Image 1 (tube, rainbow, N blue to C red):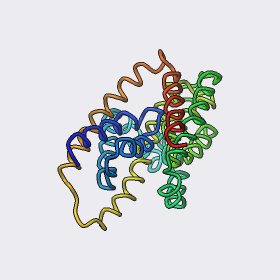
Image 2 (image 1 turned 45 degrees about the vertical axis):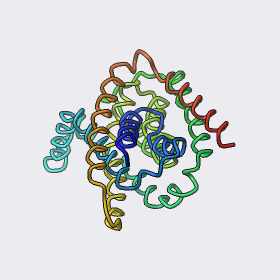
Image 3 (image 1 turned 90 degrees about the vertical axis):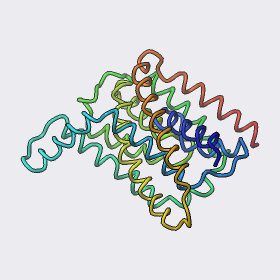
Image 4 (image 1 turned 60 degrees about the vertical axis):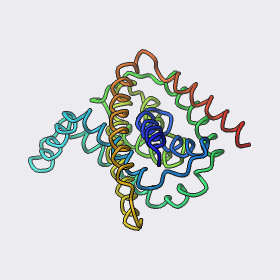
Length: 264
């Protein structure tokens, strides 16, 4: 890979992982539209490690408090808002983990087609807009219920289909259930940690089958993805209440229509 390819793909991953526009779709589409060779499994793992590093770094204090509270709930039976949130993240990650194991061949096969991505980009983009415009948006993260958790966790399974967007579908479900934009976004980001760990772990096992790895590409892909993902999280949360989801809905509609034009 050239450095231009590394830079573009890593930055694309970093900026799209946590925005409701689907990073997996963009990592598929960039090589297709630019006629670059596929970046390969090792690079995909690297940029996801970068995204994981960014979200853990940004929410380090929250994650530390949740881990401490979770152990307190297990050992001392002391329950708190942080321990409930920790349990919510653990239990809420089970459906997507099972879905990934059962559906990975389908997801890595026919569902990677640009027309599938076009359909999910448009369809789930409209659903995101609907949930943002008509959701009540009154409940914060401390008010999250097991009903919220069940709906959001099963919605996350849909993100296995490229173009859906893991962050997009979980925010959509959260907004539909009455969470505020900030609460829906933060819970989505927390759910991304085990989701990325599971996907990265599964792909890392496949790396053992590769004859060689371009470690320079891995290094720069990880670093650039981490930096851009951290910047993305920071500005997204700062600007979310002001701009809402409309810019992302418009982007998804434009991208989906463009893909239909190119590939139909």
